[in-house]
Amino acid sequence: RSGAVVAQAWATMLNVGDKGYRKYARDMASIVEKISKAVDAIPELELLVKPDCAIVPIVATKASRVSIYAVASVLEARGWNMFTGQHPAVMSVCIGEQHLHVLDDWVADLSAAVDAV
Image 1 (cartoon, rainbow, N blue to C red):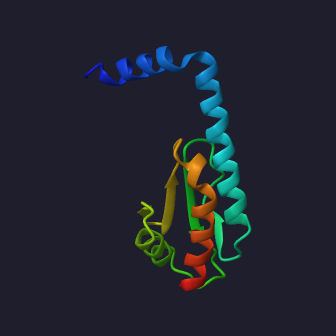
Image 2 (cartoon, rainbow, N blue to C red; image 1 turned 90 degrees about the vertical axis):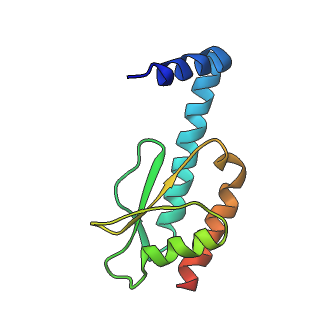
Image 3 (cartoon, rainbow, N blue to C red; image 1 turned 90 degrees about the horizontal axis):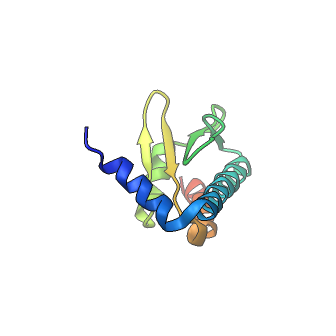
């Protein structure tokens, strides 16, 4: 196997340092928490599992008639890159540092997408 991934990780640590890495980790945890709360506030959606890292899986509640794939399509039409899976039908948000700047817009678009479908 290539050592490129290890080299990238090492270069990142050298660049941002321990404090920078810890700040980044806190930021990612904050984003996951905000997305989780946003999903909890929409009755038609729920988390598939409690996220503990950088991927937040979202499903439609059993009681709703919302298609999570339709929600993902609306979000994609609004410029968001969503990941979907099946068994169960799921839409995932893969978070990164860029979400610090666009999260409020994404949350508004998520709510609008559910309303649209």
